[in-house]
Length: 122
Image (cartoon, rainbow, N blue to C red; front, side):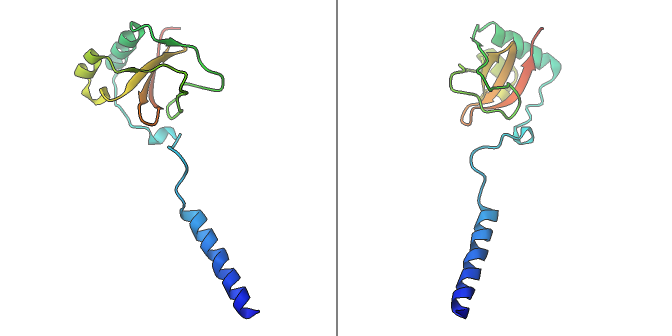
């Protein structure tokens, strides 16, 4: 009986330890974990105007808010960063962009996570 109780206690402790150290499933949706592109107002305006001219408007899918850290649904069409923007601001060249609800979203392409939102005119 004592051996059975010891085995049970060890198994319980191991389960708790595994649960505490298991990695979180999927990429983080925490805005603090998104890369900071450090874009100034002029860069944001240039990106917004450039993406707006691409005519890649998307309807906002239900249950999606274009906020930093959000996963971008597959039905939203993303485009590579425009070449001129990539040349002017090299740190954004590997990201994709889309236009959603009059806002430009800059997206990390592998995880399809929003890293920057640039609001347009109302």
